[in-house]
Amino acid sequence: MNRKSILLVLFFSFALSGCSLWHSPQGKTLTIKWSEPQKLHFQGKGAGAGIALMSTMGAMGMAIGVAIDEGIAKDISKTRAASGKTIEDIFNQANSDASLQLNWITSNITEQPALVIERIEFNIVTGKNDATGVKIKALYTDTTGKQAKLNYPNDYPDHKPKSFPLEELKSNNELANQLLLEGFEVILAAAKNQI
Image (cartoon, rainbow, N blue to C red; front, top):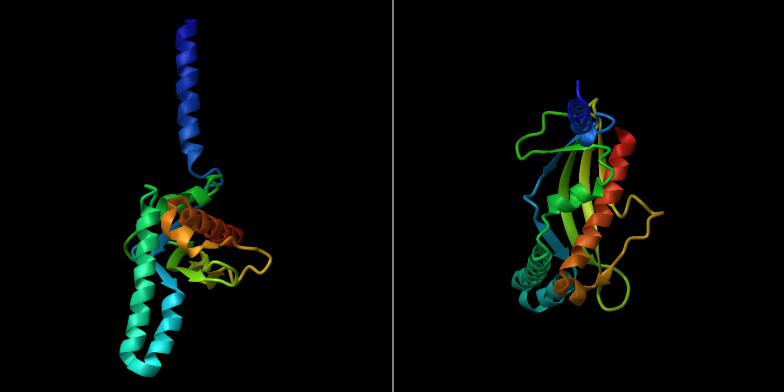
């Protein structure tokens, strides 16, 4: 065999073995599903307004409050989407070490371990300038079928989550992605610890 042939064989051997290890070095797969199709929620200003309006307008006042929050959620979603990244892209980024192969599905989950993202909600937290953070609710199911609720940030008191002023969050398309990435990293780390 000449030198070129040997190099070619070595290159393809390396490339093929690298491809088999690329996604999941430890051979672990996590099935992921969204219970709501990547919808973002917001809770904050409208809830307070709805309660205040309810005293004078009844149920219509509460409906106006809900509509305010829905409008803010749409503003954040629209601004976040302008970054060109899907929520799935951000979750994949949280798995940057590629220690798990993420299997995204839209149908019913039949494989474990599995993670169902139940709700993603931006909300006003304590602080100045309507500081806004993110809450993520997920359901993890291990290989035996045992389930555990994962609530970010409430279940992780040692973690100090970021927050940004609401007006900045509605105008800067990377800020919502930063909050989501931080939350997904914590949720994914918790799932990895249970696999």
